Amino acid sequence: MIELIIDQRRKDLGGFEVGRVLPYAPRRMVGPFIFFDHMGPAAFEPGFGREVDVRPHPHIGLSTLSYLFDGEMTHRDSVGSEIAIRPGEVNWMTAGSGITHSERFETLRRDGGKMDGIQTWLALPTDKEEVDPAFSHHAGDTELPFYSANGLSARLVAGEAFGAKASVPVFSPLFYVHWEMAAGTKAGLPAEYPERAAYVARGRVDIAGQDVHAGQMAVFAPGETITFTAIEPSTVMLLGGEPVGQRFIEWNFVSSSKDRIEQAKADWREGRMKLPDLDHDEFIPLPGDPTPPANPMS
Image 1 (cartoon, rainbow, N blue to C red):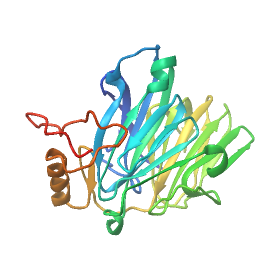
Image 2 (cartoon, rainbow, N blue to C red):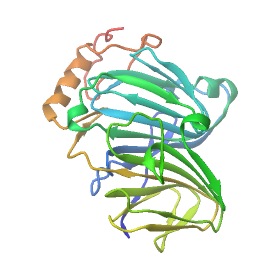
Image 3 (cartoon, helix red, strand yellow):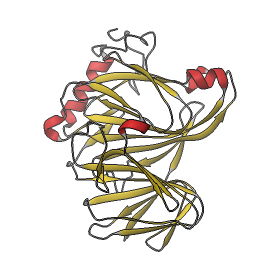
């Protein structure tokens, strides 16, 4: 059964709107998923401003997962990665003890077009919070299991579900699945994990007898198979897993320790976190600082 419906809260991030779903006060996490943003949908004309780009910024204690329905985005980070992500692919970045990265929209700026996708953060298990930072890119056609039949197309984005396993190197038991459902299609989510949710990115779906529309996340009680029926053509993201315990979140930092977050803030403020080699001429200052610090290590 559905325990909670969370409506996205639209936020303007400087010329580009996102729908923030997690964290949400009554339910801050679903399994290890601690942050869930729907980027767009948006349409851009060629030559739009650079304020849409996400300048270099830091993370600790988490992995980020970027997944697109439309558009293209270029990722650069402090471990030397530079790659464009396109629809149906995964960018998986593990911050661990600390990483910085940027996200640029260079192809969209040149050509114009649509942008639509999901970025989520996954809290690392306590004993993995300080792992070495790393990045990997995963192509949808070869590394993310895909299934299509009877009006349902399904891609396993990360973790394990429905008897399949994705190649994304996750750190705790979880699942993350992309469904495309034709109108009238029925499907079920088994009770494989203790914490589960579904986000409707497009369309409308009857979930366990309740109408859930685009921009809403349904959080489920454990222990029951959840039934889905697409009321109209719909895009649904399924997510969840084993809980990892309480986490604190401040700005871009996630940790089981408030002291560790304070240390990360000091490190960024004092320029002790290396910027991406290929994108080190600007950065986002720590929110609330009266003046930007000196340029962090490049």
